[in-house]
Length: 350
Image 1 (tube, rainbow, N blue to C red):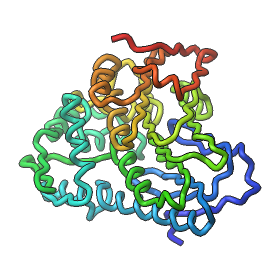
Image 2 (image 1 turned 60 degrees about the vertical axis):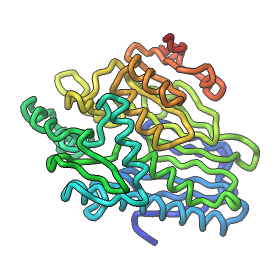
Image 3 (image 1 turned 180 degrees about the horizontal axis):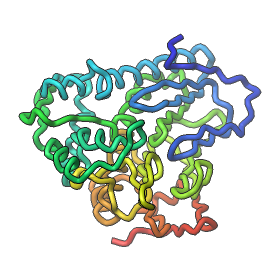
Image 4 (image 1 turned 45 degrees about the horizontal axis):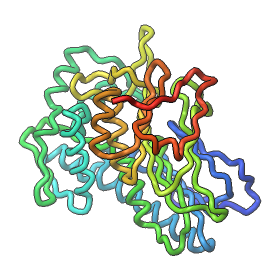
């Protein structure tokens, strides 16, 4: 058994109150799963929970999903020496055949967001290292120098070849990679053998099917200023993906100010958009992942406008504890319970 992966077949006597906690949301399974697997991919632990017809089918599909997660990590993580992204960062040209969709989507969202979201932010994020062992507030001069290497528009993808003429550009897909990994893991699952599942990478969650009792999945929306257990609502849904970007995931405080890990590529600083979190719900997990980051950076108005172009559901929580939703359809699967914590649910008025 690989040391990065632990498979647990859950026994029938597990109680239905089991909760799996994530950095942004809380998955609330109400019926014991038939199997669960944890795999490290794209810098985080990914939990795959499946319901199937028999234990052998569940075991085999957990293995298949885990393999897919590892393959994505090996292919696109900048931290892995021989990955496509790592080769691009060294040689400024690489074939991304088989993974081209995630690179193209990252470039598309960068363009649509006017460069607020930019997959070439690595030079700047390494300076801050927020959540890492050497997190710090770099000098403005350092940030300005690093920003010279941030330029998604210098990167092209043609005939599966990713290239740039700027040999200082460094690519990383952290703001889209988790959602993409979940998609590839789901594709590896045999839906004839597996009736339902939920895959959680902390800030990104993918759901499909219904549990044996006919119920959908329940995912909690975290209070951005509460503990990990504090919720301001619960989504009940399936066949949808959810991604949340928030200023409470990874941060440090200095002189009374919070410096979080979501960097605005236009300034090189943590985004100061008046928001505490953005949640995006769509059928495409990678898109949800990228758009929650882009929406958070852009702020309420620009962010809502961007998400409207993609036709996704969105919930924006601002620093005044207003919880805005962009479509009445959101209320069909959201149960809001944030009043006691001072939150107000309201439609976004265009």
